[in-house]
Image (cartoon, rainbow, N blue to C red; front, top):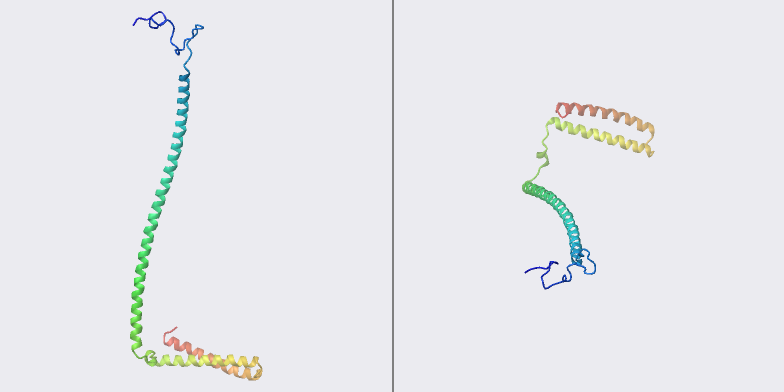
Length: 191
């Protein structure tokens, strides 16, 4: 189709509306307001997308950090469970050993309760040991006598002269008994 001098089809003598041509003055065409609106909308959408992407990246970093901590905690929990199971097994084994020993002791006690116990047969002493038992008993008796003499003196049941006379004799005898005990223990190799 041929065009006239204005660049329009031959039957059109003036520019169509909305092409940005101002017929009143011969100035340059005006920009279309729709283009500006579209540009503003596109800029706003781009900014919003940038904000959303930044938020998503921040959230992703937080989630990755949380995931790392969760994995570390899972490892710790797994290790703790393994240690707990080992300890539980050890305790079960100890309980089993204890129950076995307890059964053994119960059997021994039952066996002993069926047999008659004769104290003289349990403690069979050599003549040397018999002598040691007698001397230790005598030394303990002297010690008791010294204690009761001291008590009688403090309660004024005896006078000081009587106390000193008997304490001297008892102390000498106690000393001799202690020496004899030492000799018997050395001879019996109990020292």
